[in-house]
Length: 110
View 1 (tube, rainbow, N blue to C red):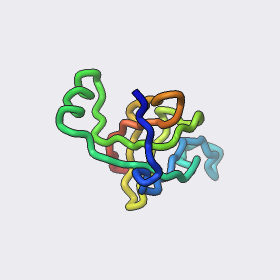
View 2 (cartoon, rainbow, N blue to C red):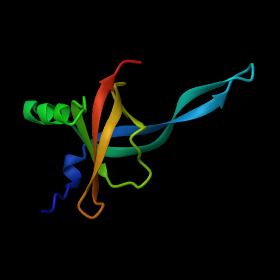
View 3 (cartoon, rainbow, N blue to C red):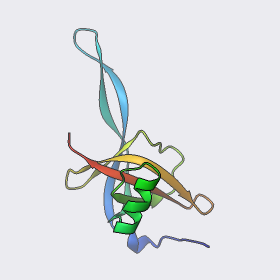
View 4 (cartoon, helix red, strand yellow):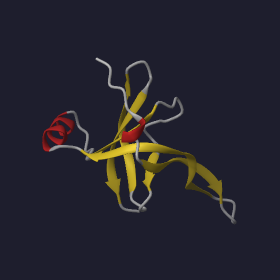
């Protein structure tokens, strides 16, 4: 079954961020988030059944973000929505011949 994503469904701009180590003024290290890419995405809340199924496998995901496939996205990255909301990627799923990538996320407060 092919789950092609039409360009019309990818209607939100998101920024994918990765954690990097930075050297502080006193020589110590601290972690900062740096932008990896800004892409078009579809962002939707998971349905009650999908949340229930996610919890059954140990995930707390409440949203799914669908983007065109990128090989450089990892589960330790995060998503920054245009309205400032931050989402931690819980797990990701590659769809059909690497056409799309589904990021199952949890909203975080930072």
